[in-house]
Image (cartoon, rainbow, N blue to C red; front, side, top):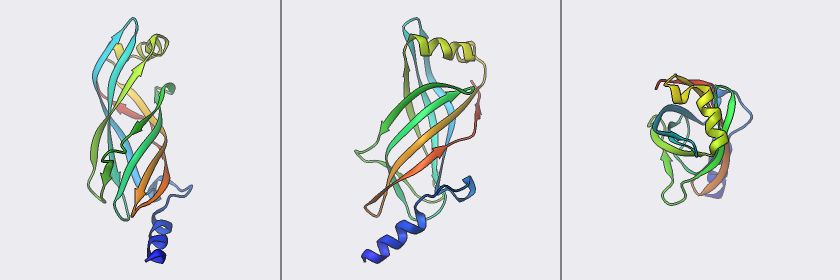
Length: 150
């Protein structure tokens, strides 16, 4: 049994590989509940995660930085330890990442065009801590710049 678990982990564990061999894909798909004011800004970044190959995994935490038009505007952690985000092969899951910005970060966001209704180019970078068959490991996350319509 132990050798089976180890073999499964090695086969599906991430390496410094190209995107076509990545075990999962995380893609920003939209922005909701935008509220920009003098004291800061808040919005929800809607993200879609999909397991591309291998056995199901559960995302426990997602450490990420959000870049808008190549400007890093937020860096934080999403914690999903309660139930976790269960990803099965070919079954995408959508979830929201709440983003809160202070006044200076909000000004950068407004300068990028979010407050004026322009489309945005968003990138997520970081890593996801996942669990598969009770074995924890980290998967790097780096999306291309994705154009989000407002």
